[in-house]
Image 1: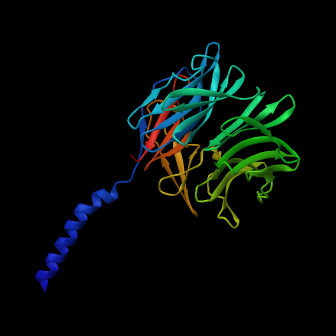
Image 2 (image 1 turned 60 degrees about the vertical axis):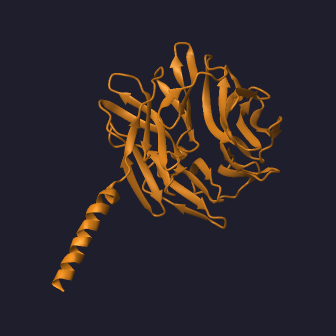
Image 3 (image 1 turned 90 degrees about the vertical axis):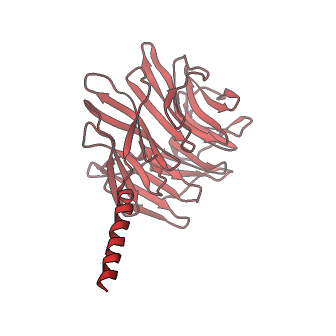
Length: 349
């Protein structure tokens, strides 16, 4: 009997020795080199399609004004793309989206707006039907794209159906559209400033209507994340006694549920659903030399830090995207004695 017990104990120890090192490995954030731009730089957006393709947009500050900035991830390294129309002109690049097999990017080019489209044949541009004073946001899905902003006549919702542009009407009382996103051509969401406060709107393929979302009192909306499953998550801030705290609202197809994870006054614009099924957000770091990320999984919120950066005084991940089984981050890092320049980090991979 003692001999059998000894054999079992030895087997357990052997199994632990084999399994524990692998089980103990926790994915951590690693730094990805990015070719420098002309600082100070502003990062607009990041989108990935699997582990081998991602695009990051923004603009750098040249002597004569802002110039568009576009970077591509090929699964191994970041490189700068300067082949798109208007790459050498004044302007800015905004949100980037994957639409079918193409990449669509909003481009503000010398005051005018256009959608850059990259296919297997190269770059092309779809100009907007009219210039706007302000280009607030852009979104695109197969069969539809929207650009929202303002001109001298007020609010504009421009809709592209693949062949031409039309102007859509917003519900009465809407003063300003702050953002827009879409799941399909007949399911789009926008958050608006109205005479009675912040309101969520929804496009059903026919008209924009008040979605009647019971937002918390004295709150605003930073982003809306619609998912293929039909789940929708809203992130924003609620103000109480002059202080802001982050809230999340989730629609499960039947009702809205509001939670207040311990995120302080985090701006939730860059909230994404990670490969682990949790929500991930960049948050304000309490370490000047490291970025910080929050992971929200139901009632549990945990935090992780990016790699330490020598002589950094401010590390700001601006955008997150799921890239296969990893997360990609793109933002800026300010090294002591210099202006903010580009940085990228990856979790997993």
